[in-house]
Every structure is written in C-alpha cells, then in structure tokens.
Image 1 (spheres, each protein chain N blue to C red):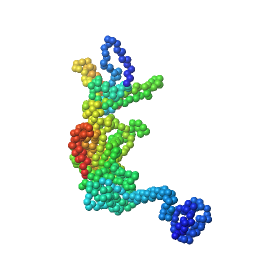
Image 2 (image 1 turned 60 degrees about the vertical axis):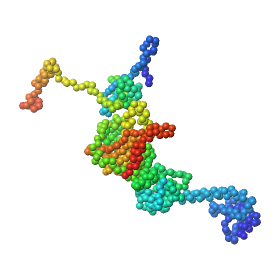
Image 3 (image 1 turned 90 degrees about the vertical axis):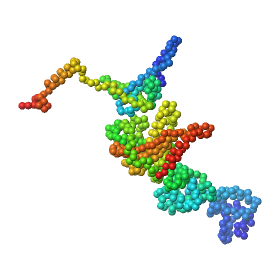
Image 4 (image 1 turned 135 degrees about the vertical axis):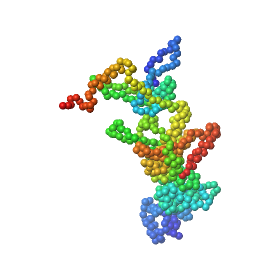
Length: 431
Length: 153
C-alpha cells in the first residue's frame, strides 16, 4: 500500500490536506512532506501544488457513495477543457493545410502532380519550387460514383500556405468559414480547369473598378496661378462593370492589325466639355481590375448591367427608343477601350502595342442581351504619336436581342436559343 | 413654376381660353464657341427649366428635342460709370438644345456680305470713278519708287 493510501485510512480527506494532485514520491520524501503538512496550518496558498494543468483523480480508491456527487461537476469541467484543448491542437496543426473543392476526380490520377501543376499556374513565381513546398496531397473520404472528393494539401511551411492563400484571395469564390477547421479555395469552375487547355487559369472579379487615363492636345489654363500656360487635355474613363473574367493568356486576334487600316473613324474636332458626357477630371488612374502581380492580366469578358436611366421602357416614355442601341454601343466602346487600354498599360505598352489586345463584353438588362468584341490595335493617343498612325481600334457588336418573350406563372415563353448560343460561344473563346 | 401674369377671370359670355400661352420668350443666338452640329443655343428666361425648354420647343414649334442642358451666365458687375458706381450687366440663362432624330442645325448668316458694286449709270458709280481718278492724280511719280517729295537736291 502506498503512503497515500495509508493516509486515506487514517481518515484525513483531501480537503483537510489541501493536496490537489498526486504525484509519485519516494517513500522518504513523502513522510517528510506529510510531517510538514501536519505541523503547518493548512492554508490554500501554501499547500496547493499544480505542476501541470491536468488533475488526475484516482477514482478507484474513492468512496463511491459520498464522493460521486462531488466528482461529477469536476469531471464535466475536465471533459470540456479536454475538448477545447483537442480542438485547439487540431486547429493549430491545420494552419499548414488547404482544402480544394470542385476538382474533378479521374481513375488512376496522380493527385499530387495534378494539384502541384495547378498551383504552379496560379502562383507562377513559385512554379519551380512548388513541388518542394507542397508536402502531401490526398483526397478526403471514400471513392464514390459521381462525387468529386475534396482535396487536402499540406504545405511544408505555414508562411507558404499564407502567401498562397493571399494570392487566391482575389478569386471570388473563396470561402473562409470561421467555424470549420479547414480553409477553402474554390476555382471559378472546375469545368475550365479540366478542359484540354487546362493550363489557362480563369479568375473572376465582382464589381471591379476599371480606369483609364490618357492625354491629348493642348489647352490654355484659364484661371489660377498657372494662368495662360499650355497644358495637355486630360481624359479619364472610370467604369464599374458588374463582373469580369480575366485570364492568364491573351485571346487570339480577330483580324490582324494591318487589316484595320481601312476602317474609318468619325473625327470629332470639338472640345470634350461640349459633349454631354463631360465631367471635371480629377484623379488620374489606370486600373484593370486587379493589381500588378496578378498572373491573370489579360481580359476575357466583361458583364454590364443597363442602368435604370437608360432602361428601354423609360426611353420609350421619352420617345427616345432609337437611343437605346446608341447607349449600349457607347457603353461597350468606352468600357472595352478603357479595359484594353489599361491592360496594355499594365504590360508596359505606352507608346504603341506590339500585339493587339482583345476583350469581349456582354451588356444586358435581364431581358435584352447584346454582345460586343473589341480589338485594341494602338495606344497612340496623343497628337504626336497619332500623326501617321494608320491603325484603328475596332469594335464588333450585335443588336440587342431578347432572351425570352415573357415569363408567365413561372413559365418562360419563347426562350431564344440563339442568344444562349452566342453567350456560350463568347465565354468559350480560348487562347 | 410661378408666372406673374394675371389670367383674365372667366365671366359669362367670355370665350373659354383653352390655350394658355406662356410669358416666356426664347432667343436663338449664335454660339460663341464651336458647338456640335446638332446643338442649338438659346437665351432663355431665368425661371425656365430644362423640361420647360423641351416642352416649349416641342409643343409650340414642333421641334424634336433630345436633351437640354442649361447654365446661368453671370453678367459682370465690374464696370463703373462716371459716378464711380458699379454697373451690373444682367444675368441670363443659356440653354444648349440637342436635336433628336439626327437633325443638324447651323446658325444662319444674318448679315451676309453685300456686293458693293453700284448699278450701271448711277450717281454712286460716277462718284466712285471720280474719287479713284483724284487719288490717282495725287499719287507721286511711280518712277520715284515710293520716295517722298522732299527728298532731293
């Protein structure tokens, strides 16, 4: 029998002794210890000993009847503490992990290679070290028909995971569920990833800002401390499309740059403040919708909504139905020009582009759709560079077509397949 | 809108006035700066709004109007008269009217250059001829090459 058991027999309970934990002492030291205990006055501070947070109780030795009632709240509390601790530990280790949804599953796939390939394309700057940065990759759960299991990947260092997570943050469909222990990445659509040209990454923005700035011509400053001096005319387009898709590679040209020399462009020799769209220009911004280090720097498609002011019915009330098409065309022209111009500027083409920048746009008000394609052939916008420039920027557009006739009782009548086909064709345009 | 005119009150036997003519008058002016081809410039009374101008032109003159933009031109208060009092030039509102349906408008030439040659056999022609002869006689010898008379030995 151990010393403690002897003590138990003598009738001294834990309360009187104020011994909160049991630790195995040698026989000699134990007797000394208890001698000290008996001599001193029992006070909580002196006698409580807690080398670790855990408290163990020797349940087998307790008197069941009297001590169970007192033990239950302690046990409950201990259980909760244990649970919290386990959860904490789990959460701590999962800081090295990331979870991917929507990645299609194939028989006999090398998931590690596949995922490493995808990550290298997202973060092109770490493409060569991606293999060493990613520790393990595996699918979760049992293999089932028709279900694409989630992929868990573990990084070697936490900072790699954090940095990578940051890069994919501008990917809209990223979820950060606070309750779950994993963090998620979701790509725009697994459909695009598993295409034949799966090395092109599509990233989508929602309500991005697109700005473009350029200068042309001279004007005399009318008032102020710089009065009378010459200054170039500043032009700025600020646009906020509903959403846009950007890709890592340039779309193919519609027609070669030389073929655009024959198009004719209407010349407007008047100052911009006579045009109805003039507003005083303050900020000079050039922005595509994503900042410089983003790998998807070329634009694919933009989606625009028609504002209420130019809605079809309102125009009809004001007897200006012919202006609807004009507005759509003008909107597409301005938005696409600013977007492609900003892309060119981000690639370093300030004087003239080496290859054409191509983008597409869809403008809709829910009922009517119109599709536009734009090819930017030159960024020579100032008077000097534009003197002998035969290149023209071209916009191809469609008339606005209605997607459906009416919607009655939840049923869609007269669904126009041509519109859907055009839309899909536009979106499927790949480099 | 408030119009400070007294509408004649209806009494039995009066004709019923069904057309109310506004007390506003538009003035078509030549634009100072070059305007887009479909824009016309008007001076309008201060109380008129964009919608008033649009309705005015559409209803009274049957002009299809697209959009109207207005601004108020400040008349200067800088000039002073002989008593050193400031003289205010009156303010006026300018409306730029863009015509719909692709119509264009250029301000016509109100004072065209008239051909000054007088009719044959009239007094003016004889007078002009006489004046020209006089001037010819007053001129110096062309062989002197424009040198004045008092040069010389």
